[in-house]
Structure formats: structure tokens, C-alpha cells
View 1 (tube, one colour):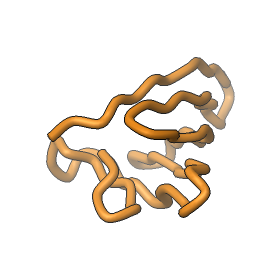
View 2: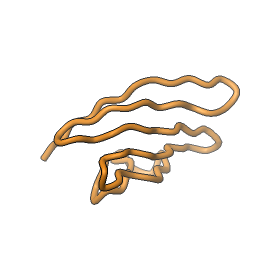
View 3: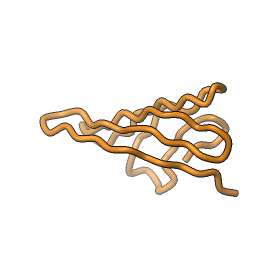
View 4: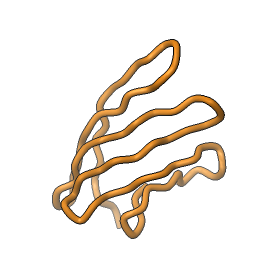
Length: 71
């Protein structure tokens, strides 16, 4: 979830999220839990956005994300 430009996890304290959205719409964040982490990059424009995520560690993986403005 993005709130006032800062990324945060809406589900409680399970994950630590740092980063957010710049005024240009660029998204950069790191989501972590314990020693596991994922880097998130992308762009928001208007009411939508998309980008990619990648994990670090012994079994790296990645994927794409999509977002839309709600509320």
C-alpha cells in the first residue's frame, strides 16, 4: 500500500517495507521478513502502475506487479 508517498504493508507487522513513490511516479521499495527480501521497482501514472520484483538469496525469483488507485 502507498500512503503519502511511503510504502507500507497493510496486513500487520509480518513484513517490513521501506521505500515508496517519488513525485515523478517512480516506485522503489524493499519488502523483507527475517533474512528474506524482495526489491520492487516500477512506475505509477494516473490511477495505475506496474513494475517488477526480484528476490535475493540462494533461490532468486521474480515477477511483475500491477496496481490501481482505490478510494
